[in-house]
Image (cartoon, rainbow over all chains, first blue to last red):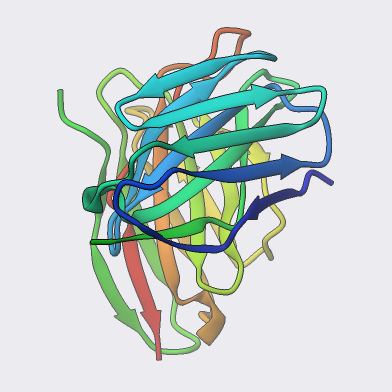
Amino acid sequence: ELKVEQNPLFLSMQEGKNYTIYCNYSTTSDRLYWYRQDPGKSLESLFVLLSNGAVKQEGRLMASLDTKARLSTLHITAAVHDLSATYFCAVVRLSNFGNEKLTFGTGTRLTIIP
Amino acid sequence: KAGVTQTPRYLIKTRGQQVTLSCSPISGHRSVSWYQQTPGQGLQFLFEYFSETQRNKGNFPGRFSGRQFSNSRSEMNVSTLELGDSALYLCASSSKGGGLNYNEQFFGPGTRLTVL
């Protein structure tokens, strides 16, 4: 059974600081997503990582994937308040039909303190 | 292009009742997946439909069921509601049901179900 662990669960950081969220998974995966969720809202896709060594960057966020280590990271650079949200990684296994089944991590609740 | 829509957005039911939630995918999308989000269990996959056929199913009891119509709209039904069924139910659609090319899932706003 695929298990996805995310850490930390909670993260308070000051504006301007850097930090990394980690996503470990237990079996081989076909691809990995990172999502953002604001309170009471749905999931917003941030990145999809398709292969080993993939790196994606958007603004102050950068995601990477190491399939050999079964590890993905979401790095936050010079945090600003509007990055406060809960971040989820989701690991994909393809079914026999080739369609996606997402297994989500526990989420990291990020709070940026002015 | 309109996004994924879910109705209703909020719902209050009592134990033992049943409920039906609806999801309309993005136009042209044929795959619809359902997820349950609770504070205790997090985000869990319920099932996935493509071309009116259930292709994947998560580890949920038979009280949870779904279907997809020919226009790709999907419904999920929960019978004999329990307190633990209180959750945010998210629907996601993607353009294809399979193949090696990845097809990103786009999530709807969710239906928040409260069981009293």
